[in-house]
Length: 216
Image 1 (cartoon, rainbow, N blue to C red):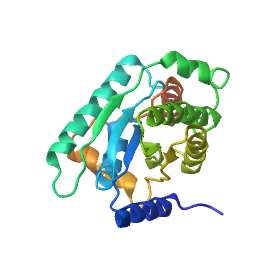
Image 2 (image 1 turned 90 degrees about the horizontal axis):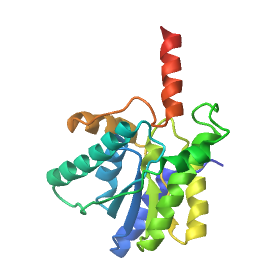
Image 3 (image 1 turned 180 degrees about the vertical axis):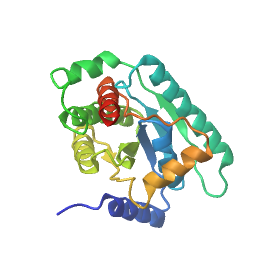
């Protein structure tokens, strides 16, 4: 049976609302545009620390551009909020790109969306789980499921396994639901955000260029 992760998330939010509890959430973010809707949605219910950890991103200037865009968005988003809203903290992980290339070794030619991507999910989520434990967070999760190109079931499977290993609950999510992806596109335009046209790694860039050539 396919799980409805959005329904599970809503149930958790309803339960904590009844208890008057505002949990601390360690939110791995892949980029500012993907984080936009997630922060708009979850900052009403969680004390969030955004964790920008993406050693997969290529080239270096792209990494730093995305990191700065993430910080700028959080700052501007926080300024504009009215009504119930919990302040958002930011933490940047190490840009240890060699760790990503070591992980991807032997899987360079696997198409995007396959095992290499799943290993990349695991790499980033493991780092998030480790810090979530060290920082005594109540939950950790990732913005990655907002993308129509990302496998939400696999992300939740990996997250829940890491939750058992690290002793920090994984917040179930499929942020593309309820028009989440559409809203992220709207917010990107509203905030004038830089919106990249490839996932981030050198392999996804090469695959995109290959498609563009074949379409000419």
